[in-house]
Length: 482
Image (cartoon, rainbow, N blue to C red):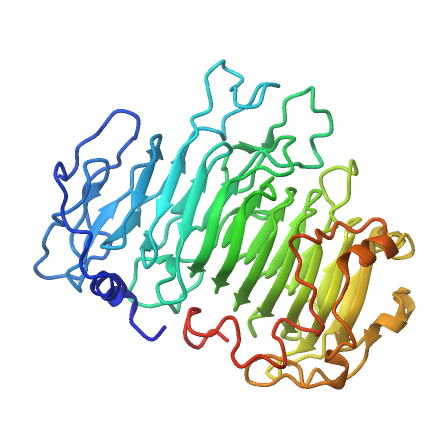
């Protein structure tokens, strides 16, 4: 993507032939029953000098001043209680938190019924391809999808959906909040289906959780989240994307989180499956899981910021020990980088975590000022190595490795990753003799959570097939981020 931020909406509107002009009934700054609007002052993208108020905002949003490129800017209401669609011809503005549905309220033991006797409102927020959503710079502005509701954000390679701050570029970090999704999925703080599940989420986002492993919170496809991150207090932050008890019925495919001041993506329980993730320049941990996360993730590129104070993976089971965090991460390429005062390892496996890292690469960025170790395993997670709930299988370790950890050495290759410009490995070891058989893998490792119906049977190590003519991330991620 080579266009500037302010031009994105105009480019996309032109690309789709101007099909989304003003429709009957469109007007500005009118409150309709159900949604709650915020004030209409100011502008989502103030440019100084003469300003023109946006003309095509729907009656459930507030008109702001047009941006410097003449695009309409419409502020979303603070609560959305009816199905809504964000069209690509408008720049949508987050002035503060925007909450979709009311499922973050305290739930009774009956799923879908709030503790106060009210009903959960199941709301769908649809976002068209090529749409821009901008958070107010310098605030915790964020989009919160509550349990029972859905986000249907389906972009394309030619027209990804972009979440960012409201300034003129994509160079910042910590400039707004991020995206939070809560679901009815499993969480290890809830182990009795006869009782209410109310997990208090980070970022003052309310409650999530339930007992439906396959719960569906919607779709994120060809979505970019950049420049976000907000800290309420140490350990209580808004990540680029926070997924709280999100179930496996949710679709997450072709998603980039870039330059977040906290974690890139954090999974709090749940079993969401994801493919084609690009995590770049995040200042804390890029991939973080906690509290019984048991999803599957395949095709991941992580390039840690040279200014980072985090790791490519930070993982734990923190919450309760009702069940472990033990996701499957397959075909990933992790590129660590750190300064002298930063964590000196690429993977940080701690607080009782399990997990299965398969057909993957751990390497060190050439700009790193240290030589980080491949893997740190805390004392309370080491027992999971011998129990085969923490496994590294077919992994290239192009970093310093502590062989006393006790992982199966026959599945580890201490060789140069030899990454090319597409981040595919040129190492001979990266070409496997046959595709992985996930059913057989589960037989070898009975604690594995691999979903053979979701995971592809690849015959190579790393995020990108060495024999591919082009990389799967080509053309849709932010320019210069990889």
